[in-house]
Image (cartoon, rainbow, N blue to C red; front, side, top):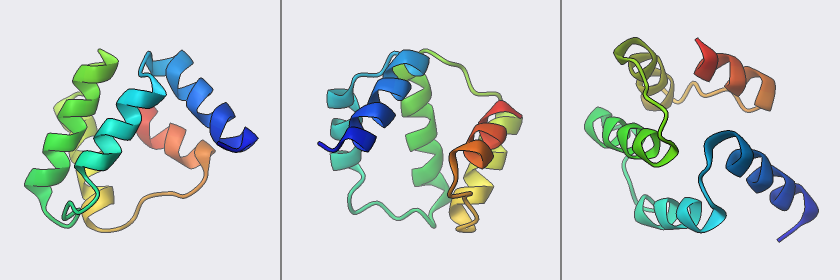
Length: 86
């Protein structure tokens, strides 16, 4: 794992309490997922929310689902943080 990846996983674990192993398990489970399917995306968001023990409001879930399904996800960390803070 590169230094960048380790740093990213360390930040995720510190902020969400999700271990890199759990992240890899989720990633493996959605390798062939259809992210244009709203149901699939909602299921993943709820799963991650439970793992992190961080509730996601219906409004925030809707925004995240819309961004993913419409392939309109921001690519930089600042924009991603803003999306999840709203």
